[in-house]
Image (cartoon, rainbow, N blue to C red; front, side, top):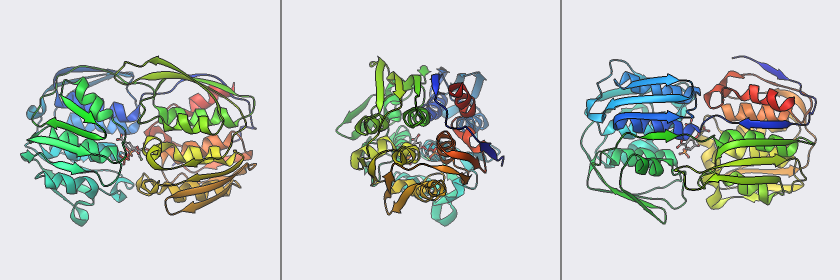
Amino acid sequence: MTKKVMDYKQPALKGTLTVPGDKSISHRSVMFGAIAEGKTTVSGFLLGEDCLSTIDCFKKLGVTIDVDGTNVTIESNGIDAWKEPTEVLYTGNSGTTTRLMMGILSGTNLHTVMTGDASIGKRPMRRVADPLRQMGAQIAGRENGQFTPLAIQGTQLEAMDYTMPVASAQVKSAILLAGLRANGTMIVREKEVSRDHTERMLRQFGARVDVVDGVVSFEGGQKLTATHVNVPGDISSAAFFLVAGAIAPKSEIVLENVGVNETRAGIIEVLQQMGANLEVKIDDETAAEPTATLTIRSSQLQGTTIGGAIIPTLIDEIPILALLATQANGKTIIRDAEELKVKETDRITAVVDELKKLGANIEATDDGMIIEGPTRLHGGKLRTYGDHRIGMMAAVAALITDGAVEIDDAECIAVSYPTFFDHVDAVLK
Ligand code: SPQ
């Protein structure tokens, strides 16, 4: 763990950034490319540690993957040609890799063992294992498949009609990917729509999929066809600079090529609701994943309430939105966000405990937090809990604090945003 002391002295932030590729889409591009027969090319791939873990797992399954900067080529003879790995598949810190791979591997003819780091070892996997077992999947793991290491014996799966108990794109995607290998018609129903990159990419790779009012359905047994995937910038990474630009005085930051898929873009609505000076210029609405140029300038902010159906569309942005709320006038209430407790760390406790150390007026609730602002924040020594999003929240806080902020682990940020500190330096100049 490398400590980092940030003493930025409250600068005005100026500049134009292109944030790295979307993590969710990068993972899926490799997974889909490996399932499909032929050569898939990917541009704008995120070279974050999580996505590199996904690449490593598929290499162990015998898929040829070449990385040239942010261009990735996946050459596969299709899922039936994968070889049984002699080694454990290591998914690092990545919940997306672990959970989506569970769905994919369940319908192969292979025996595989999967494990990740200490944080992955504490994250719940039965939310995926149980529905997959209803399809016939054979999954073993600690506490009846709740925790890694997991052993999966691939088998023929049967399609099912499944209603999601929680809004989770990882659970939905694992089931949909298993459904590709199942007999019969797959139906997955969501009460609140989670990110839909898997559904979009299924279509991009030639599958026939219907999505109507939160119900996804398709015929099992469809083959995917290799294609090109253009990965947009990650709005979850852009979020840190959107908030930095909104709260640091006299600032203006332009963020280019940011993915604004409506199942991910809840932060835009919240910023607008809070009175942020944000311009959104859509580049191409017809792309598989639409993108926009976002320009954020400092402004007076108002507290707000964030809850209900918007939560899945900004779930990973809640740590940085909590920091934003410390600078807004009045009360901000974040509710219906209990899913934060099962991320890389318990993000409700982590955000509240760490922002309190900087002087924020913030309290945890059962399903979120309440923040009263505005508060002048001071420096302090913060923990990241090995969670990239807590690390970046602390770094953005350091841009507005009186005094230095120290974090215990700067390296964890490389999971999703390896060039984060270069981009901070770029807007400081
Ligand atoms: O992959 P991982 O570790 O689960 O990453 C996180 C993140 O903050 O980057 C969550 F901790 O993002 C998830 C996100 O919260 C990525 C994701 C996806 O790609 O499908 C979906 C969300 O998780 P979930 O549990 O709501 O499905």
